[in-house]
Amino acid sequence: MNSKSFSTLKLPFAMLENLKKIGFLSMTPIQAESLPLILKNTDVIAQAKTGSGKTASFGIGILNKLDVKRFKTQALVLCPTRELADQVAKELRLLAKFQHNIKILTLCGGVAFGPQLGSLRHGTHIVVGTPGRVLKHLNKESLKLDNLQTLVLDEADRMLDMGFIEEITNLISFVPKERQTLLFSATYPDEILSLSKSIQKDAINIKTSSTESKNRVKERFYEVQESAKVSTLIKIFANFEPNNAIVFCNTKIECDEVAKSLQTRDIDALALHGDLEQYDRNDVLVQFANGSCRVLVATDVAARGLDIKELSLVVNYELPHLQETYTHRIGRTARAGAEGLAFTFYSDKERADEYKNESRLFEEVSTLKDVTSFSMKPRFVTLVIEGGKKDKLRAGDILGSLTSKGELSGADIGKIDIYDRQSYVAIKSSKIDEAYKKLTRERIKTKKFSVWILD
Image (cartoon, rainbow, N blue to C red; front, top):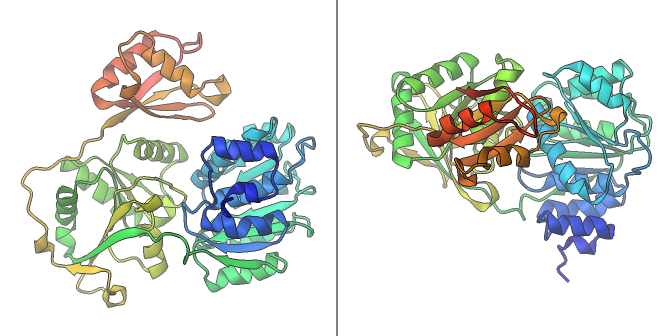
């Protein structure tokens, strides 16, 4: 029997069957090292990069000791951003399919408070949320953690980077002292070790970086004058022809300026930063994730929690302030064994020597070929339906309505994202007009919904 098989763990048969069904055939290094400890109710502090399978590590542990008959909050997972919280909740629901009636609720800022109150009144087993919104519910006593068994801090280093330490400290006062605390972090700065000592008990330290496959990122550095940055960026896109790319800037203003400059040069780009309203942020993230936008120009904080499994290329528009930030940025490409590209611009006034090593290439901009005509257009366009989970809409309902009479096929339709009140559908650019006309004149599940095209 494979020693990395989930069947080597003492898990319910139904859970093991579900793991096989959803494609979890063997444990990743972080799962193999942490799960035996987690299942013994041991506190764990684990260093693992994004995409290593850490969500399943704590998810399986939480679900294994859950008492489904008790509609009390038994586990709390804290995440740095709403996007990561949504992603974690989605995977937990997938893992929980072996058992009926497991309720998982997300509590994040940027959305209305009232509906969350209603959901909490009905009871929930697992809460996944951001520290600020969870603390607000605790202070208002709409959320009680008296029955909490497991506390998880996911991407703890990012939460500290984003200034959540005060919220986390306050939040701990609402949590029972007798609990299991699991802390996952991509890096181990002193602040993380200090946090572990203050909230964990005899935590076992796990590092799997030596056994995980290293990211296959080719890193290139260019000295570029400020006036030539946009043209150099376009040269990189033209020379390497990525399916998609993230361009990291250090300021919000720069994000907007770079995105606008690319748009005027026929490069499809959107800006993502902290000044965007939550609904605008959602629109940008959905379009980038579903292929309706090919270039995202973002600040570090705004991009936290963004998980794009197939990202071709990352560009640092200027040197990051910290090497750890650089590592986080380029780690977004080359996931799951794929190859990735990372480019970094620096000026003659910036010290790039500290970034030099044997694997990084420092090249002249002249090595990039000149391209006279180049554009990057998206393969898809996003259609928005003013209906979602609250209207009992499912992806199959939308797909069925779009393909019902043969004008469109399944191949014309990309990713479908369904939220509480809205649904986003990626449609091939050449078919967007047909899809829009079809949904404006026809019903989905006997109901007519407003539909519009997201620009």
